[in-house]
Amino acid sequence: MSFNSLGLSQALLKAISKKGYTTPSPIQQKAIPPVLEGKDVLASAQTGTGKTAGFTLPLLHILSENPKEKYRPIRALILTPTRELAAQVYANVKEYSEFLNLRSAVIFGGVNQKPQVARIRQGIDILVATPGRLLDLESQGLLSLKRIEIFVLDEADRMLDMGFLRDIERIIKMVPDRRQNLMFSATFSKDIKKLAHGILHHPVQVEATPENTTVEAINQKVYRVAKGLKTGLIIKLISDGNWKQVLVFTRTKHGANRLCKKMISANISAAAIHGNKSQSARTKALTGFKKGSIRVLVATDIAARGLDIPLLPHVINFELPNISEDYVHRIGRTGRAGAKGEALSLVSADETTYLKGIEKLIDMKLPVEIIEGFEPDPNASTEPEKRQQGRGGNRSRRNSGSGNSRTSRHKNNNSRRRSKGNNDRRSGNKRH
Image: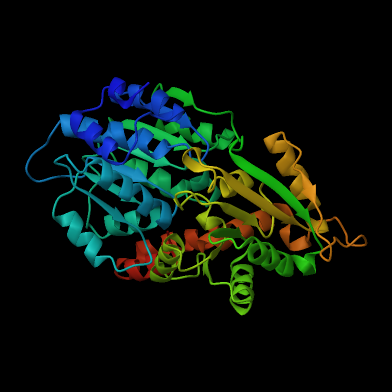
């Protein structure tokens, strides 16, 4: 099948061709036709399979086929959980709409709102947004969602993981009842299906790959190692392999900072990216990593779905995630678009439970290797650390990447109602 057979406009086909694409991915083949037909769609596809184009291409086609008045109200809203993902989706929208008379904008917290507001006031057709900044600007009367025709919820499961359910519910009340709804995600839990039931109307459900599978092009391996020797091992692997581009995941923001400093001390250029970093620092780190001036990007799970790095060869789990599904999203940063990739995990004794959970989820026994001089501690406990156990520990770990907690978000919402004047400052510090 070619893109020509999907029913997309010539302007879109020209943009697709310019990017060098000829054959749609499985999720694009399955999702684009029903979206073009105006149906609600519930789509599941693992990360790195082209699902962003699966909704942006037909969305652009529909809007361009039905032009509106000279003043452009916002007609399509794409909601994403993180700033990085919002920027990535916006870049795709801009590229695919190059030959169309459509305008778009992206808004997220952590940066000055004035340029974003100025762009919106010029009139736009498509808005890509994170929940926090969107609600901030709407509460200030700086944008309206009353003319939305197409509503897209991207990475819906991550939205719930990060505690955005109340925000989503508030946003749904701001858009018209009659609209087309598209929900895309890497996985679909019971909570996601419950959310979909309340948003989508008789949706077409499409799935490109079995839920929670890992990309076949990724070579996965586990290194068993004593906890205190992890830093030395990761430096050895990167140095001996002369790896030039490595994405490393830690469980906490402080852990990311510490590892980054150790890398730099070992003459390996590195930068950290997580929720405590300013947006400018995050952008600078990601740009340097993509250009090759930074060899190692150390990240928390905030980056697991928001980074689009072509041909990324290596992903290393310095610490395993205590939520098994996050493993799939982390390693999905490599092995994209048919390219080969390598995903390595440094596993200490206290992460044994996490490893078993991951192997059960992906239905695969991961090969194990031990490097001389970095052997695991035979006397170490295999019990997870207490601070990582239980629902509270999971929530704390998740929010270490976002800079939020559900409690602080609830408090922020209440504060927002009392004082609209501080919205931009609060969004910059607390919200995605």
